Image (tube, rainbow, N blue to C red; front, top):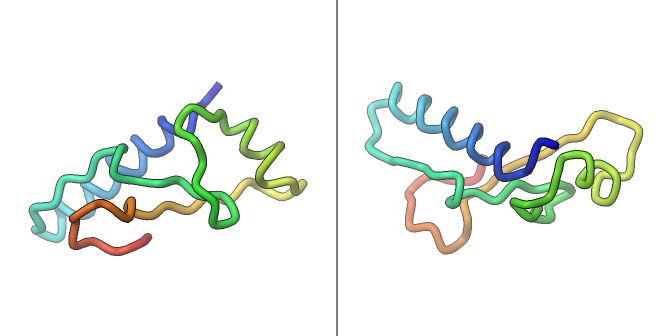
Length: 79
């Protein structure tokens, strides 16, 4: 099963690519991100299937958002 940890890794990789194109020197790691469902952070060990069943609770496509963890000193904002 695909875990939230893998989603965070993918998001971090994509953010770092965008950041690099903008000429910024930030380096975001998966551990710097929270993956959210309905505004609630998901455990990195949770699978997407579990998130969809217990957190999303809708027949529609699962929608996840992300944010930098509050204790992160990065100058980037929520995405």
